[in-house]
Length: 111
Length: 86
Image (tube, rainbow over all chains, first blue to last red; front, side, top):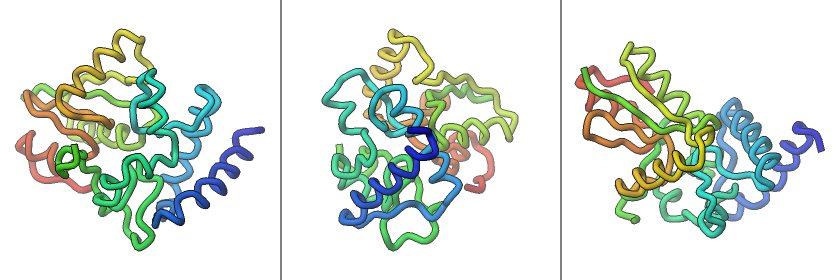
């Protein structure tokens, strides 16, 4: 599958996964395109679409927790930020994603 | 002049914005892209980040202070410069 088709497929699949969780794709279309491009490349290299903004540790149990969409593994953290770490997904009520900072989990008392 | 270094990912747009933040202000910094580093270097980076309770990139060190994530207001505070736009 070529990268454009794969990106389209990931967008379709991810949408179905995140919607029941109360998330949607960021309204920042340029950011979403960039992140999906990175995920397609990461999937081609590693076999799964890892988050582009978290480290792949070569530890399978830990790494499976950053496969996109990784919201279920970080639910409290991402709910508190109203976005996922990379920003591909935001809470369904968010209209201004630039207003949502990245907040470390430890700063939220979650680790 | 503050000593600035950071760990980043080549695939992370927030890491790019962070590098641009410092470059725009002519603040020298060193960086290592975690995903482009060799395995021993990656292991060292993970140990350093975990020692500070950090899991995500960008991971910025300004003198002895650490900032996890794209936080331009915090960068500006630590640098002692006017707060920045997003």
